[in-house]
Image (tube, rainbow, N blue to C red; front, side, top):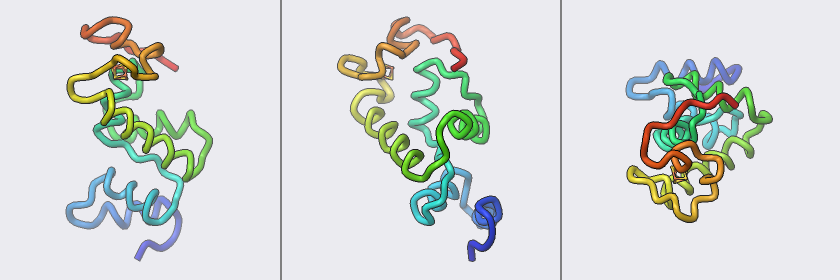
Length: 121
Ligand code: SF4
């Protein structure tokens, strides 16, 4: 199992019942140590609130990060860990922006609770 290129391994995982893109990429990044960025609900929520124009579909959000970051397992794992951490501490369902280090760059924090405009970076 899990032979060939990263893309082949990913396709193999996605062919399994119950395995979606987030699960497949988590297995590849954390289990197999391969360089692919994991998109989860935390990532989507932070992108939206920061005002990143990252897209709606999983592949769009994944490409948004992978096209902008140096390719690397440690980089992808590290950023994902930071996203999870800030999401649990601050960027919860109801955001607690006081003390969030992202606030100076955050469209939602700048605009209050109103819907943030999309920003291209
Ligand atoms: S400033 Fe608020 S809305 Fe923006 S990322 Fe931080 S917690 Fe989330």
